[in-house]
Image (cartoon, rainbow, N blue to C red; front, top):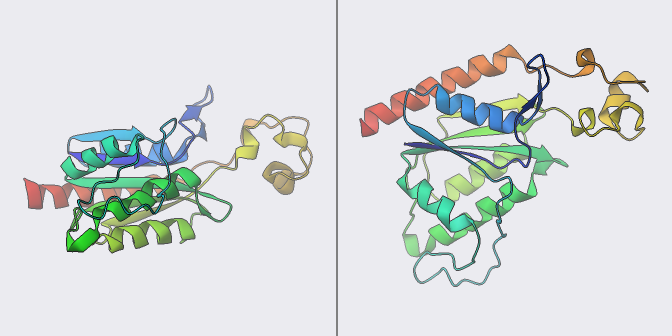
Length: 219
């Protein structure tokens, strides 16, 4: 089973024509899962209680985090999964807070040389500028510190500014909409950026590689 995790607080929303308005991270994590040809499970961190690492070191004796929240249940699913697909958005030039907090807790899995995620295959979905970014850098650094496998693929997708759907973007001087289009009476469908078909093609290639890896190693 391949486990997909979206760290975004936004879930998929489309308009009446099917145009994607929100939830790009979820969209592509799910798309990759659906195109591997393998059984999968999807988890959104939206609404989950995920605390950041407290540095208490109570995990040092047994590699089990002692904080009481939703992280442990997801951790156990990661243990059972043959691979993970982890996606997160770029907020203020770095990974979003929930994604950061979630990955911080991987610290509890690597004490005394007992790397519980050793060799775990993975894919990274980075949503933001569409280019290499601190989001994927942070995810990779956490994965590497736990001696997980090098990513089978890294999908970089250009995100959609929240200004397009906040309700005030048409005339907010601080927002992306006015910055790109000037002041508007109304945000029309043709103002909203489309997701490039190339993103889906790249996601499909990564999904195929992931599925083949699972079948070769676990089939």
